[in-house]
Image 1 (cartoon, helix red, strand yellow):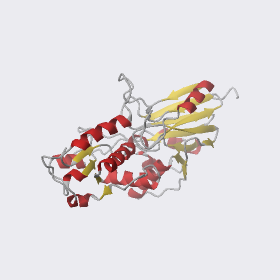
Image 2 (cartoon, one colour):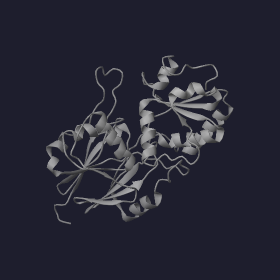
Image 3 (spheres, helix red, strand yellow):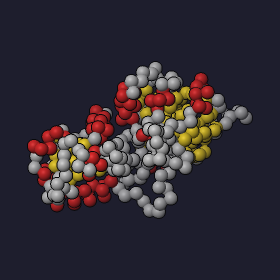
Length: 326
């Protein structure tokens, strides 16, 4: 280590707000970006589709930017990346599911980039310039989330991404606590942590608790059960697949983003089916009795044109609600 060695952490978005997660770490003249998300406007922001981080510093110093690391595939962490890659050629490091999601986004926007995409796995150690990155599995409400320990000559910086500690997760291992303990024992220079609901007392409930409640409700429901949720919540879909198979029901997906995300999870191995495939096309629901169906719909935050809002308004082209629906 020389006297000139330094580490800077430079947030470009995401502070004291929901969304636009984007941060740079600078070490001895080299830059590395972590996440590149968007934020969604509220109802008063007429004419805006989303907000992007201010990445002008990264563009001004693009010759020193060695790579971009994406912790997971939620919009507030990956949604702005396609726009950035249309302006800059830089390698991207992320998990298989996130890489597939990025590829889909680039195709949808008809953006062609020269950037190389490197798929990494939990436990991988990757050297990028003066940085040594260790990727660490984390539980979250989407597939393939990872923390990243960044080794520098001055010590480790831990980027957490979004995370939770779930001792009974569905379809994935528990957050890698032994690796986090080892890194902590070795000494951590700084933690750059996402902190949604960090000020709320208590603990996040396990996904198994949610699954048990779903099973209790579905097992006694007379007709169809309609569930609203985020389109990226692959662990919850996995739990519903297990429940549907136990109770002899089929699952119809309502919402383009939900269908796409489930398809990507199946392609990349993050949604495996141990038993019968319960999925049917939404157009097939009329071929089944109501008590044979689970419908998963996007729009849990009451987005006006999402599937569950259209169902509630009687404006869906495939399904009308009935008194026996739950």
